[in-house]
Length: 201
Image 1: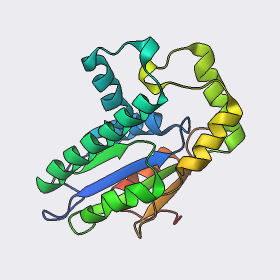
Image 2: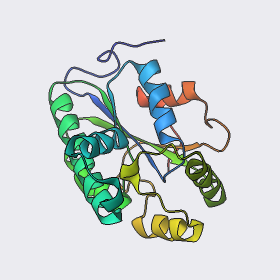
Image 3: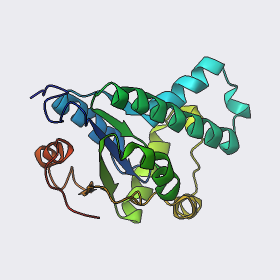
Image 4: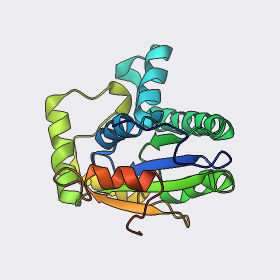
């Protein structure tokens, strides 16, 4: 079912939905599902990050974690620039990425006066994150821009240091457990994005 992008928001108050969570928690999968259900534009950090890498024709062997982090920050900047334009044009929009809690709060706060900002946080036990991450490495299907490490302990330490927890803003937040599909199920997530009630973080 597809909905009119402007049907659930007043003319002066579009909706900005942020999908966040640690890597390998199903954020991208959820973003694709929501794009189909909502009919709103959906933009993902990894899409921009991969495009930037490809456009610059980087040498994969010389591309390291520092460069990957820098390109990730550029991708977030692009997401926010697009969101600013669409919110200004009264268009509902969804952004997906592994947003860092405190940094993103500062970046998103200016939108609070202009949009109904809603947060969908994908949650998964660290053991399952490592399991999914290892499967990614085994399949070797990830774009080289992500510079994935093969060390589980190193991964968990990095995730804890970067704080991909829920964004620290007083906004409606829905916690979605992604261990087996989505809990709550997709229809409830769609309703939340359209302005319905959600589970508070």
